[in-house]
Image (cartoon, rainbow, N blue to C red; front, top):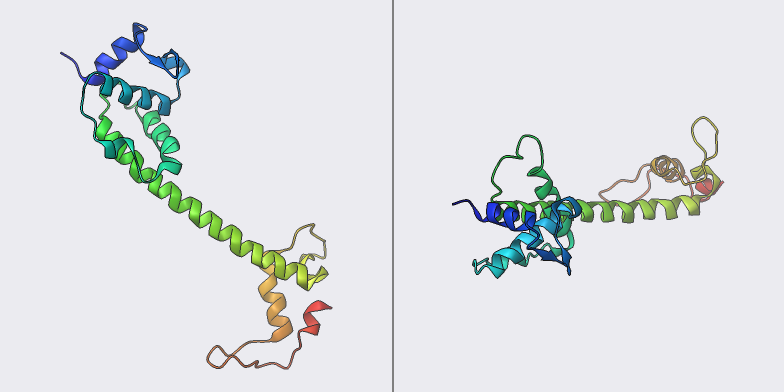
Amino acid sequence: MGTYWDHFLEDLNKGLIRFNGKLASIEHMSPAELLEAFFKWLMEKGVKVKRSILMSENINWMEEARASVAQCWRELETKNTVIDVALSELFANRLAAWMETAAQNQRNADYYRGLLVKCGEAIGDRAYIADDGSRSEDVLCAKIPELVEAAFGEVDCNCGSESSSSSSESIMS
């Protein structure tokens, strides 16, 4: 009898499947393309595939997530395991959500680092000089809090007043 995946692979090996206008070949397809071809093949065979499986909210990362999931089925430990397409797509959807979370986290980190770089550029040379005296071509972001504290002293967070009489001019020198 066999599974849908088995029949798909048979048709693929017989040269009966076209993908993106070309004859499909497992050796020349990425894991994501392989899954996409399988979904199209299922629909051509009249198998009902939920629209939610094909249209994910995490569309920005779905291709990469599908590729990662498909690669799992090619690993030594799983190469003889029958692919569960619904489970694979569900996992890819969750993985894509985590990938988007990581991407957003990186965008946030880049934004805040950019703010520190602007502060360092305003401070001037002192923001480029390492503890050993060498000069960096980039702002040393980790040094910014130390320079600001040295210039302004500690700030009482409850009232916002300076507890030191240091002026902003000392940070620029």
